[in-house]
Length: 95
Image (cartoon, rainbow, N blue to C red; front, top):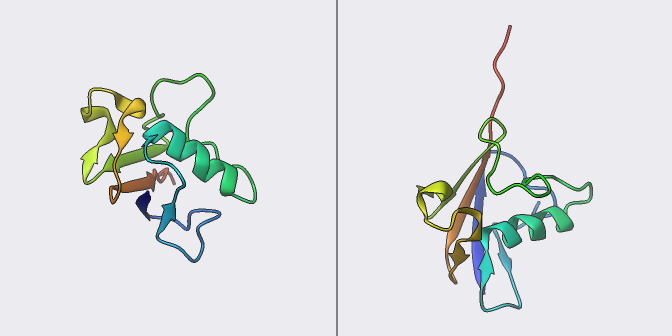
């Protein structure tokens, strides 16, 4: 199964790739984010332990261009082969 990854930052662990080839036939968005965390040289925390949603002040995530929270299962949404997951880190403003 292949999941394409887009982002507004260099995803740690995917420096030379634009997606993941997985030895699984299905994976949830939450499991994918955990997989990305595990592949990073320094662990990234996309989902806080025990959280049912992402912190929108930190991350914006879409599946095939639709915000993940529009899917009924949220982080437990099953991804399909060829899906594109977009991860954006939210930039803090200030002066």
